Structure formats: C-alpha cells, structure tokens
Image (cartoon, rainbow, N blue to C red; front, top):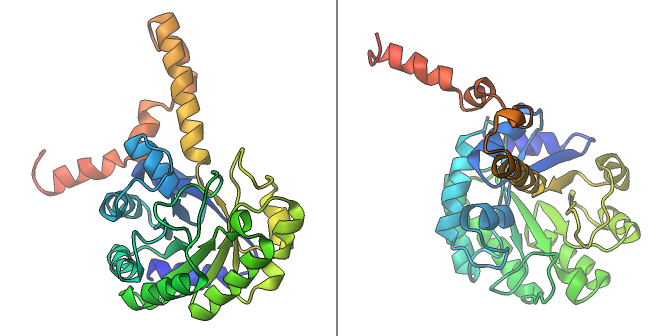
Length: 289
C-alpha cells in the first residue's frame, strides 16, 4: 500500500498519531524500530543537522528533497515532508510537490510565511496573503503525482495577526483543499483547545521543547481533538546532547573505554544499519563465497 494511503487510513482511527522528527536517514530507522507509526522529515532539523544553519529559510528545495529521499528510503513508515513555504510562489509549489510526491512521501506540509521563512517559534515572522496561500494549496494538489498525498496547511498567523485570524485562515485553507491543518506557535492550553473543534479536517499540534507552545502530553492533545502531535526535533537535540557528553568524556579521560554504557554497541549499530542483509547479498551474488 502507498505510504499516503497508510497515513490516510491511520487518520481515520480515533487515537492520536505521535510523530517524532528525523533530520537524517538513521534517525528515521531508529524511530521505526522504536515503534512509532510515522516520521516527520523536519525542515528545521535538516537545516541544523545537514548544514549547521538555523531554521531561517536558507536551504533550497533540492537540498531538502535529497535528505527527505534518504529519510523516506530508510523506513517503511509514512513520511511527512516539511516543505517550508514551497520555495517560492504557487508555480514553485507545483514543482516542489511534484518532486516530493515522486519520492513517495505520505504528506507534505506547507506554510503561509513570506520568503525567507523562519522557525515558527522565532521572532519576526511575516505572512503572505490568505488568497496567495489558498492558491499555493491548490497548486500543491495539482502538482502532486499522487492523488492520495496528504496536504497539511500550516498557518503562522497566531504570532502575527492573532488566533481569530489564524482560525479564519485555517478554514480558508480547508476550502482550498488542505487535508489537515497545523496552527503554529499557539501560546496556551486554551488556544490549543480552540483549534480542533473549529475545523472540519484533522488538526496537528507541534510540541517544541522551549518554544512558545506549552508542552502537554499526547493523551491530553488527543482529548482536545488533535489527530497528530509532532515532536520535530527531540531526536536531534537529544543526539547533540549525547555527542557533547561523549566528547567531554573523551577529552577528560583520553578514552571512551569508561563511557561504553553511554553509546550503542557495535552489534546494535550493525542491526540498525542492517549489516546482515548486506552480508547475505554478498553471498547471493557471489561476492563472498
């Protein structure tokens, strides 16, 4: 079954989907092996991890697409691709979604910020008009080679225009063809609770550690009516913390011998990267008799 259809079928269920973010293919593999149901290919994480840049609209469509392809190929799970603001106008969005849908992602997420966009929890955001975003959503649908691709429309209007305008935009985006709505940077539980009942399509919540939105459990989000909770960069941030810790051990001790409990074993690493499958291919193709 196509990944887009897998995601659509899962969205019909009552329970919320908890979706960790991946900024590299290996993280997508770990997310799958940890028992989650989908992967979020995070634009911020890709910018941070692959380029060392902040989430400041500095990457091109092809740079993000290449990493998303690798993420998608590394997992059997549905992958939700963050395509920022589509990398230009509606025609750029058409081409962007065409390319991402060719890569067999399950969903794309597009936002209504002006270029260059920035993290939804940064200051200084500006928006395109509601009409322009509606046309981008229509272009996304027309550009997709997969009729079942899930289109997630994100609005950053809360920080710029307030929650009432954000809700107006959200419903306009639904009329334009969005399958899900993501209202970014909500500032309280009260604001969070207002979103799902106001929409005719499933709502996405974004839990950003240290961001503008309060961190609440997936269970509580589900009770509010959310169908998806993103934890976009918890994996990246945990990994960076672990790298700092192991490097401090190495610098202080001159060895990693005393730190083996803090890293995965060689056996675990080989299992995640499926080394045995490649040994089997060597035998099958006569490379190693």
